[in-house]
Amino acid sequence: MDENFLQRKHMHEAQPTVICIHGAGGGGWEFALWQPIWADAGYCVVAHDLAPAADGLAETRF
Image 1 (spheres, rainbow, N blue to C red):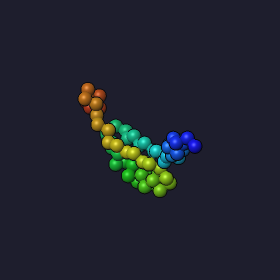
Image 2 (cartoon, helix red, strand yellow):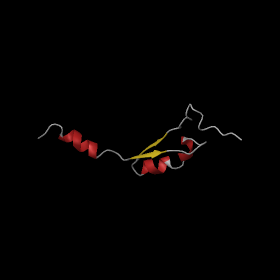
Image 3 (cartoon, rainbow, N blue to C red):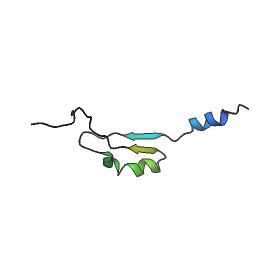
Image 4 (cartoon, rainbow, N blue to C red):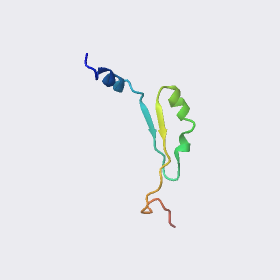
């Protein structure tokens, strides 16, 4: 038996992942209600807080 077989088999059986990306002015906290639902369904859930770009594109000016 190929000794890497079990590693390859494990990679294909890895837990699926849900990546949550928030909109402008939001944060990963927006998905707090959904994270346990997806986790209970067998998903790995990632919801990061994204920082605005250094060039100021996220700023609002009137």
